[in-house]
Image (tube, rainbow, N blue to C red; front, side):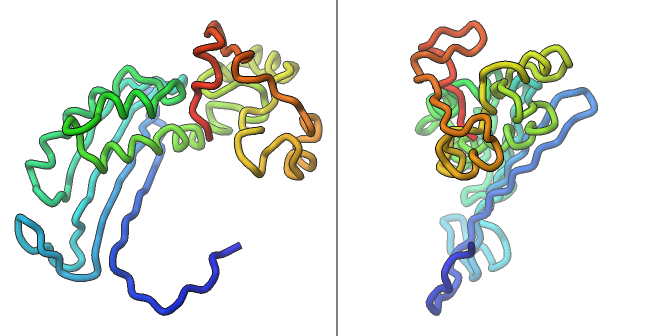
Amino acid sequence: MPLSPPVSRQLRHRRAIRMEAFERDDGLWDIEACLTDEKPRDVKLATGVRPRGLPIHELWLRITIDRTFAIVGAEAASDWAPYGRLCSASNPAYRALIGLNLVQNFRRESSRLLAGTTGCTHLTELCAVLPTAAIQAFAGEVWNTEKGAAPGESSDNAAANSQASTSDKPPFQLGRCNALRFDGEAVRQHYPRWFDHAPRSAGERVVGNASPKDSGQDRERT
């Protein structure tokens, strides 16, 4: 349902974040994020006046991932920024994302690598939304959400899918938000097999060959 009608008001600022996912011809995927800040008036910045209609920020972040969510490429661009080339100087820092995996402690590790004066505050903010954007992009394409495999586990071949379909693992998305709680109406109607399922505790989960300490509890949520 929509928000309630607002009181009389005037727009003063607009921030927009856009995420797009592209499957490449070489089998890899690009996840591209753009953040813009705009004001409906001329803005006085330290470097001069930014006329109405031109963004204060237009920042881009692109990562390239394989089908296991591993980052194999990363680049940033600052098309519009308050301090021009001085802001752009931090763009190369985002190559530090290469080697990370979006579903293995990514938010924590990216924050650590790009903390403080290493990166751009707003580009680093974009990092936080990359995991769920990639999971949404892969759902139904690379990763079968109806079977028990977690993101990043193989779901490409028939043998893996057949094994997953007969496993005791619920679909990954269940039990991770209020609507899809195991005792909720959505699960009762659409996933009756898993209604009132009692998931194992985080300490009992083991993903692949990981130990309980490094297992599913560390994976990014949808």
